[in-house]
Length: 239
Image 1 (cartoon, one colour):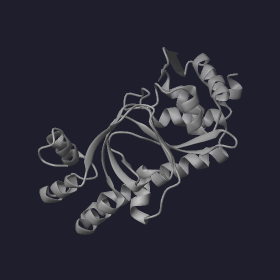
Image 2 (cartoon, one colour; image 1 turned 90 degrees about the vertical axis):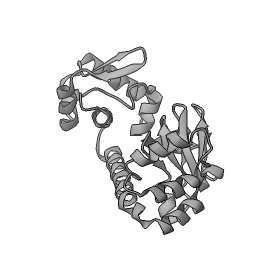
Image 3 (cartoon, helix red, strand yellow; image 1 turned 45 degrees about the vertical axis):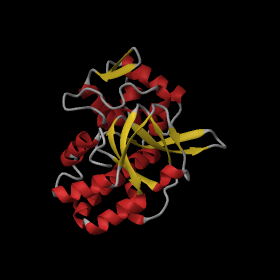
């Protein structure tokens, strides 16, 4: 990105305040930004494994996107992660050099800084200090994925749903990030179907755990939600 670009100053501030890059010196930030271009992806834009964007590394400046796997024979989908401002894509391919067989779709209009994997790797060779934050970030993502996959094998659907809600509550115990997602999208995140998720959401609503109004969901009783997470017999007791 050239310094004359209308978005240069705002993008530089974003990098200087970004958790992954704010420890870098001014020269490193300048050379990093030189490699990127600013772009906007419209809401609902789909990118598939193997297309040109699989060779790119991006920093999300605003909006949300999901990474997912799809089985077109069974028409089933599973959301691997929900990424938002502060996240990067795709750090696994960046580090190991292998293409990542995932698709991703924008949930909102998404602003990103975009560069090629090769340019980013070349910059990292000159600025190895970036590994100080990149490696813990990648480890955190892998732990989240491990927890989600473990839940899908060991936990029942209502427990998965309750844990998803709990993990997306903010400090005031209100739901964020996923509070406006459709039941289809929620189902993709816990390896279920819309019909099953809808049934348990209605049960949670009946039990006073959540409220659903105008396609927005919120947690109204965090204590009951926590009980549901830690007691898989809760639904049976309250059915």
